[in-house]
Image 1 (cartoon, one colour):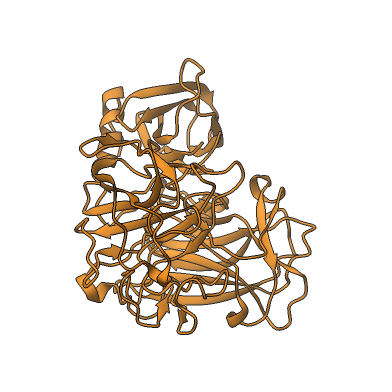
Image 2: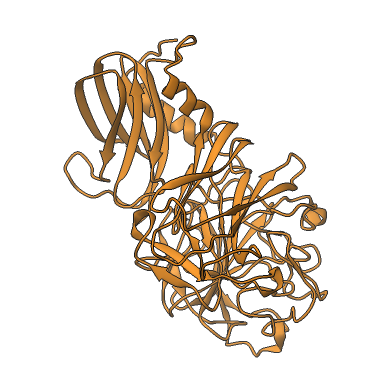
Length: 478
């Protein structure tokens, strides 16, 4: 069915896209720190799903992936790379002193002060003065908390912030020895409560059993980071966790990747990462991985694919992959029926199969491609023809500095690409005249119509041809 087209209707589409965000949808647009030039900071300590309260310890630590620890779970005795911090309610990112701490989504400042820290401090450490704390309400029943901030705080109670605004600076105030950010998400209330904590895990719950956090206040831990169907290391949909032997490579997809020594046995694992895409439609997808050549990679890397069920638990499949074959390309490791949204994850560890050769496990980009769409395009099966215009994907997303829009038209026509900011203002357009039928691509270089770079943030790319419209949301991270 043909759609009515004018510039006002595109702006309305962008605004409607924004209004559909609910409390369960991913809304965290960037990570809560100024990123280093070539990586994310690894997450060192995770949320304890067994009981997320810093003043209550029960000698059990349960990680987001369902792995449980019952020995040496009191800080600082747990092993490096395992994150067994009993009673922890947030995610700890270790970084240099005075690293800018950023708002990962827009919101309203509820708390911004230096006040007394927890009493007693976890692990029996002595507090380092009053703790710098900021709490932001995001308007969707979620509240983000930032602990151990260094003076001065850059925001005050009553102010509103937008994605990327500087909240303050990383420090070691309060119950902290080393400089780090304690990033915490609370659901339904911003108050700290040690008996019935409000904390949830923004990296979700990917265990095959029920999440114990849900039994406290019926609050599920959802994946809350905005991502796309192609997730590269450094993107929002990727998180690498702390370990003693990570090595960065200037090769792979987008010329970067990470490796860790291959080991045997889960009990020896110290390096792992998770990729979570956002799939706009449910259906059959090819899960494709990229590995660079020349890295002495494992022939038996184990990719764990988790698919979320309606009850919040996951079904896990393990795929053994030779990372030394078909390198420098995306290769399909599985084809599966997947739900829409952020309901699927891939976890890769440094653990390899018993018969594996090669010294390292490689952590690089993973892509989710609709195999149904690919089949239709390859076979040109137009018995039930699609609309004149189809935008297949925008990749990479998140991106910096360029992203490519891939689309298909069925008849020769003019094609216009528009870009709108998060407020619905048109900032860029480009007209491509008399394009032939078939597949096309267009690169947006994150510039406005005056040729000026646009800032970090969410943008809406709309492609128009013959009155047909298709809009995709993208995230620019600098």
